[in-house]
Structures are given as structure tokens and as C-alpha cells.
Image (cartoon, rainbow, N blue to C red; front, side, top):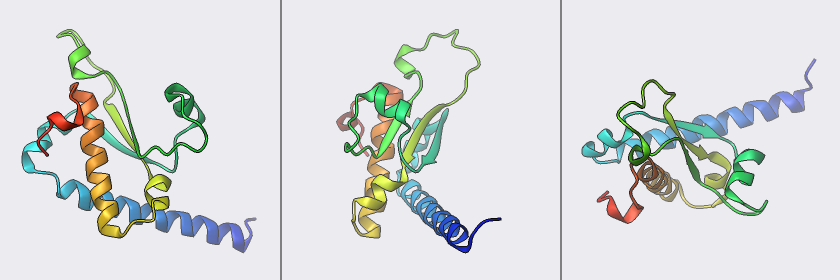
Length: 132
């Protein structure tokens, strides 16, 4: 049986996750309509923090902050015979945004910018090449 402390911790974590997902929704609505095309075939996921494998693959130290990560095959590396594949992923790391200590508005803007940055990797662009 779970203790009250464990149950409260689980409820708090769930509230944080729901709040973060709400902020993602707001950030997604702030993307220009023409950006929707760039999201085709890309799943937006949420994780509390990068896994040890993700950190290792990027060469990140334990204290390095990562807001988002694109994982997949960039469009520029696909052939016409690419076929069926799982969607590419952009993972947003909730704790990095929460620990940035910014206001809700600043967090929404950082989420929006992170989505653009990570989706740019999917399309083979540098962030400054996108006009969003």
C-alpha cells in the first residue's frame, strides 16, 4: 500500500505534467499557421528529463540543461523509398523548463522556440533559416 506521502508526490507530479502540457498547447497555438506543414510526421513528446542514453549520445554532463531533443531521420537524409517508419520525435524536457524559473509567458515562448529549433533539425534547417 502506498503511503500518503507517495500518493501526494504522485499527484503533484501529475499536476506539474498537466500544467506543462497545457503550456505546450498554448505554445503550439502561437506557431504561425504555415508552420503546421513542418510538423507533419513529427511527434511531440514530453519527458521529465533526458534519459542517461540520450545524455550520453549527446555528450552531455550531468549539469548540462537540455530543453528539447530531435530524434529521427532528417528529411534531407531520406530517400523516396524511405517507406513506413515510426514518426520522428521531438521530446520536450519538462524539468528544464520548470527550473529555468521564468514566468509562464517566458516559459511558453521558450517552448515555442524549442519546438521550432527541434523541428528545424527534422527538415535540415538551422533555426535562423526558419522565419518563425
